[in-house]
Length: 538
Image 1 (cartoon, rainbow, N blue to C red):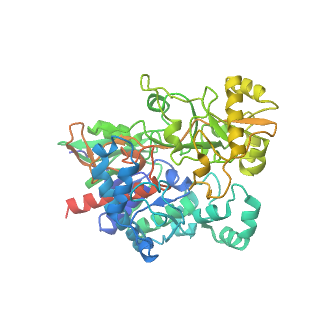
Image 2: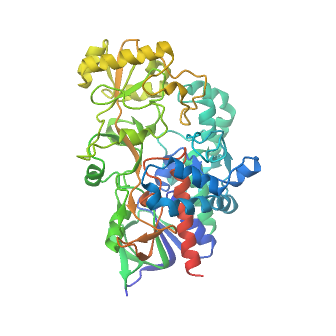
C-alpha cells in the first residue's frame, strides 16, 4: 500500500464551481475533504465567468409561480440535443434534471449565496418542454471578504465584476458603459468601497465560504499529477508542490474537476484542428484530469466538444488568452467563411456549433478561417470593442472599399461583394432571405422583438475581424455514469474515481440548451459525484 503523506475521506482536484460544489457537499456530510489547486489562485474559469446558471424546476421559479418540472425539462433537453446524443447521454440528462434543483437549494442552505431569476426564455421556445422564464439564474452581490484568507487570491476576472449578470442584461454596459455606470453609481461606489462583486467572483466567494465553514482544507500551488491505484481502485493522488511529490490518500473517493485541456497545444490541434483565435480560461487548463484518468484506466469521450464563442483580445503579451464575447450580434455585422459567404444566422444561440463544423471526409474545419465583416458604424456603436481594437493594432482590418478589404483578408473579392450586396438588400426589404435573423431573439445581447437585426454595411471604412473559435473550455474527458463515477472503455467502473464539470465527457457538448448550460450542470455534477461518494459509504 502507498505510504501516505496525508490522508482524508475525499480528495478534490480543482477549485472551480464543480470542484467546490463537490467539496461543499462531502464536507457538509461530515467527510474530511481536501481541495488541491494547481494555481496560487482560486476559482478557475468559474471566477472569470458571468455565472449564469441553467437550473430547471428550481425553487425560485416555484415561488414566482412559474410552471416547470423535471420531466418537462428532460423533454426539452431531448428535443434540443443533436442527433445521436440521446443514446449515450440520456441517463446523465435525467440525473442532471433530478439533482439540479436539489443542488441549488443545498447551496443556498449551506453558503451565503443567494440567486435571482433572470427574465430570459429558453432559446429554443419552439421545442417541446421550453419555458419563457424560470430556468436561468445568477448570484447576487457578495463581498469578497467572505472568502476569508483567500479573498485576495481569487482568480481575477478579465473585466471587473462590479455588476450582476442581471444588471449586465438590463443596463447593457457593453454598448453604454458610461450610462450604465451612471445609473448604478451609488451601488457601484458602495461595492468598490466594501469589495462587493457579482457574477463569477460572487459565485466562487460563496462556494468557498461554504467549504471553509465545513472544514475543507485548501492546498494551493499543489498540482495533481498521477493516480494512486491499488488492487484496481484509485486510493488517492500523487501531487506536486514546491518541487516535491507527495501522496494524498482518499479513503472514500477522488473527484477530478480541474477543467478542460484547451491549453495543451498538441491535444487542441488534434481535437480542434485549424484556426483558434483565443482561449478564455486560465492557462493551467491543460488536461491534468485527462492524463490522470487515462493512467487509471478511464475511457475519454467527447474530446471534440467545447464551449465556443467569439472573443476579444486582452493584449498581445497575454495571447492567446482572451475574453469570450457576443460582439457579433449587431444589426450591421455578418460572419463569412473562407469563401466570403455567410454560412450561419449570426443571432443563432448555439453559434459555436456551426463555427466548429467539420468536413466529414477530413475532420478539418468546414468554414474557417471566418471573419466578422461590418463597417465604421459597428465600432462607433461598441465602445468596448473599439477599446480592445485600439489596444491591439492589427486585430481588425480596415479598408475604404470592399475590394481592398477582401485583399486584406484574402477573401474572394467578387464573392464578398456579392455577399454584402445581398445582405444590404435584405436590410432594405426587412427580410433576411438566407437565415431570417429578423425573427431571432438573443439571450446574450438582450435583443428583443421589435429591435432591428438588419442594418446595411455601407459606412466606410469597412472592417473585418477574425471570427474563428474562442474556446472557453473544452467539454471532453473521462466518460462517467449517471452518478459521476468514471468508466473504463468496457463500461466497468474505475473504482474510487469521479469526475465533474468541464473535465468530464460532458453530456452537454458544444451545443447548449440555454445560457448557463456550462456552470449549472458543472456544479450539479460536482454535487452528484459527492452524493455518490456519501451514499456509497453510508
